[in-house]
Image (cartoon, rainbow, N blue to C red; front, side, top):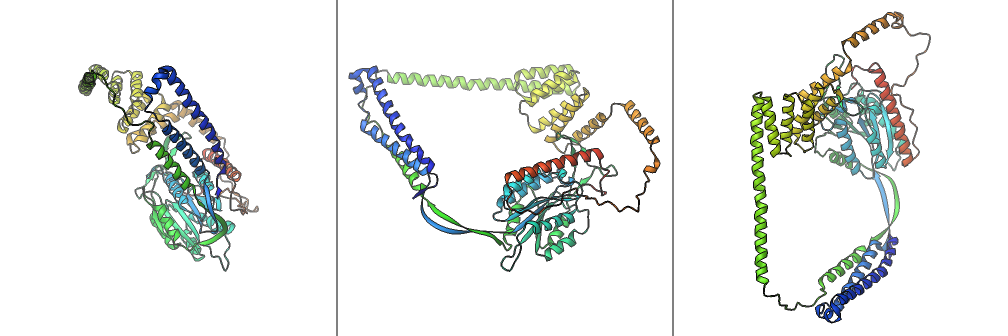
Length: 592
C-alpha cells in the first residue's frame, strides 16, 4: 500500500481538535440549559434526548472524517511495469493569413474561424508532432515539429496579417517552407521506421501564383500527403479595414477604386488535395471538419516516435470514500431523541389555526391586487405612447412630445418610450435631451433591433453636432448589431470622408503645395536607369531570418516568450512600414 499524495494525511491532526471542540460545545450547552431552566426542570424537558445516541453520532462523524482524509491521500495497491509507446504522424499546419482571410462572410472572420477549427483539431491530436507555418505573399515558420500543443496555441493566437511582410496568396512558397520543416525537425526514415508526413492547408483558396499544383504532385511522390480546408462562402464578402481601436474605417479597394469582394476558391483547394493524395473539406459553422480531418489522419500509417516503461498502480481511494459516505448516511439515520410524548397543546389551538388561515387569505388578496393596478397603468401608458406616435407622424411635434412624457410617467422602465421621447426631442430641436434619453434607453437592456435604432439615431444627432469621433463610434455599435445595414455603412463612409480634411481652403492649399513641390523636382530622378556595371543587390522579399535547425523538439516557456516578443516586434515594424509607404511596395496587382 502506498499513497499518491501523502501530504493530505497531515489533516488527520484535525481529529483531536474536532474532539476537543465538540466536547467543549456539549459541556457549555448543558451548562446553559441548567442555568436557564434550573436543575429540576432541565432533566424533565430534555428527557427525550438520548446521550448514548449523541455519542454514537459523534463517533460516526469522526470515523467518516478520518476515512475521507485517507481517500484524499489516494491509497494505491499493486505494482506493475507497462510500456508506453508514442505513435503518430508528422503534420505541418499551413495557415493563410492574407488580408482576404479578414473577410466576414463567416463570423467573426475567416481567420478567426480557421483558428478556432485548428484549436479544436489540436485538442484531438495525441502523439502526433505538429508544426505551424503562416503565409500570405511570403511564408514564415512559426513553430517546428513538436508535441507541445500549448506552445502551438500561443503561436496560433499571435498570427495576423501583419505576421508576414508581403501580402497576397503564394501557396508554392508555403508548401516549400512546410517541406523544409520536415527535414529540419522531423524523424529520419530508416529500414525500421517509416514516418508518415502530412501538410494541412487552411485557406480561402485565392491562389495568385502558379506552380502550387506541380509542387504538390512532387511532394506526394515523396510520401507527403496534403489535406485542405476551405474557409469562406462562394458569395464572398468585403475585406474590412479597421483602425487601431478596431473601428471600421472602410473596405479594401482595387486599383480601379472598387470594393474588393473576396470569394472562396474551393475548386483550387480540392484540386490541391487531390494531387497531394489527401482529402478536401469545406468548413461550415457547426460542422465537424476538425473531427473529419482527425479521422483521415488516423487512417494513415503511424510511426513509433518513442517508448518508455512506466510503473502502474491501482487506485484504492474508492473503498475509503465509500466507507466515509456510508458512515455519514448512518449518522443521519440515527436520531438524538426517542419517541415523542403526547403533550397537551392548549384549549385555543383551533382558534389560533383559524386566525392564521385568515391572515394568509388577506395577504394573498392584497398581493394579487397590486399587479392588477400596475397592469392598468401600463395599459394607459401604452395608449398614450401610441397616440403620441400618431401625433409624431402627423408632424405635431409639441403634442407628440407631451404624449411621450405622459407615457413615460406610466412606463418609466420602457426603453421603447425613452427612444420615442428622444425622437420627440429631436423634432423639437433639443438634441442634448435627445442624447440623454437615448443613453437611458440603452441602459434598460433593449432588444437588438431597438438598440440598433437607438445607436443609429444617436450617431445622427452627434454628427449634426459635429462630434465626429463619437458619431463614428455609435455607428460602429449599430453596425455590430446589424452588419448588413447599408445605411450605417454609407454614413460611416460619409463621416470618414468629411473628417479627412479641414475644408476647401485646406484642399486648395495642399494642391498648391503639391504643385510647388513638383516644380522643384528633377525629372531625371524618375527615369534614372540602374548601372549595368554593378551586380544587382540580392534582396530577401520575405524579410525573414535564415531558419536554424532546432536541436530539441520541446520548447521551454522562456523560448516561447522570446519568440513571441520577436514576432510582435517584427509585426510592429511591418505595420509602420505599410502605414508609411502605403501600397507602393506591393509586388503584385492583388495584395489580398
